[in-house]
Image 1: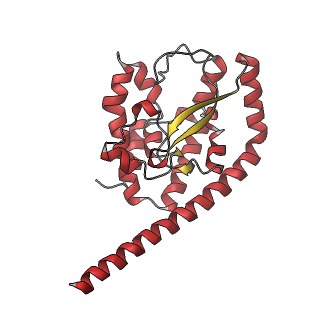
Image 2 (image 1 turned 45 degrees about the vertical axis):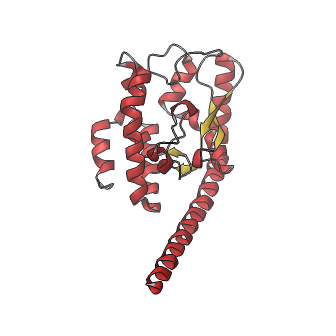
Length: 236
């Protein structure tokens, strides 16, 4: 019996060590990729910043507290896509009048998310991981949330791709906030947990490529076909 207990402890320690090693490798890759992307995209980001400034003034960058790994708060960065003093619902539908003209273009091609590369450099986010949620929607007493928040939040993930048309979905319901809480969010959590179980560097790479493709050519987005394709490798 003692040998069995000792073997279990040793195996558990090896699993934890392997998990730490995998996270360290991902962290190194994330930081390297983010730094290179920031350097390559600097001219584009400068143009976006100028467009936001000319179109609707300051501030250019939108900052908001989000839930990070193990529910540690951090400040998410985005190019501002909504009007100043934009009080209203915590989620955004496609028909939301708070979105500026420049902001609508940025959101269509996900250009408003580019400043989050700096969040990645700072270790607050990763390239691939569950999208960081607004604090009002996070319930850390829920075991699903605790599981999802074991990973760093990311720029993209399976749920982000499956629900790339989220704003259009929300525009078609009478109570967007309730629909998000009761329908979309539970499904997102489920997708994130399923991806955690079979995640590899190769699957991360595929998600990044898919994200880039749909950001460049959003009209090619087919939510039904994409969901089937992405979920095929996740298991039950």
